[in-house]
Image 1 (cartoon, rainbow, N blue to C red):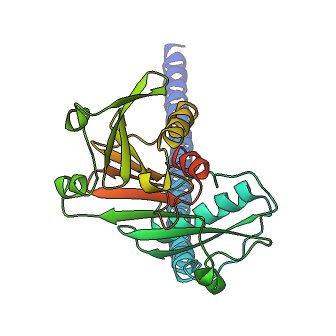
Image 2: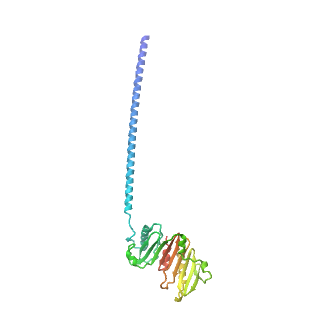
Length: 300
């Protein structure tokens, strides 16, 4: 009985050992399958990542090439507005806006320009042509029954109603020397005249001429009259003072001057304003005093 029990126990032990070995093999086999699956997934992800990276790199290279091509095309096809250019606007203020766009395109976006034609009569169409470069230029404004192209050759033979110029010098001191500026001290002792709005001017008479002078801010202003023609500079000076109460002139860096003549004077220089900004001098000349001041007040 004991032998039989011992044999049975031994047989059971062998059977359990066999089952244990078989279970370990199955577990190992399962582990190997999982490991192999993970490796395949990792390889697949790596391959996918490499493919995606290659695709992005290729796309980026393609976009860069396209950008370069577009840039090259834009540069080579940049419009030339230096010659005669058609203007579509019919209203003078809009025409001036298109003229100024073309002027900034040709002379540089930093340049300053009048932004109002100075008059409201739409039956007189504004026309513009220019000459020079960004450092030294002249812009010519004229009127006609019909609007002309920008820089039309025919405009060079037309009488301008206004001219705006910029002249650049070697230094600010050279530019300042170009301004005919007079201080109040330089006219001290001369007869005084009340010009209104608290402005007091002085009159210098001699040799058949009269010169009325006054200062406003950084501006030195004067009116010339021919005494032998019985011209009086006071009404013109008072008109200037009144206009400057409504319209503000550009602020010079240091000096600005305005020269005017009595309207009845023949052969006199047209009213002109000049001011210094850095090493440049700007000037605006117009046949009509009101037009001059209105245009100057919008220069920017």
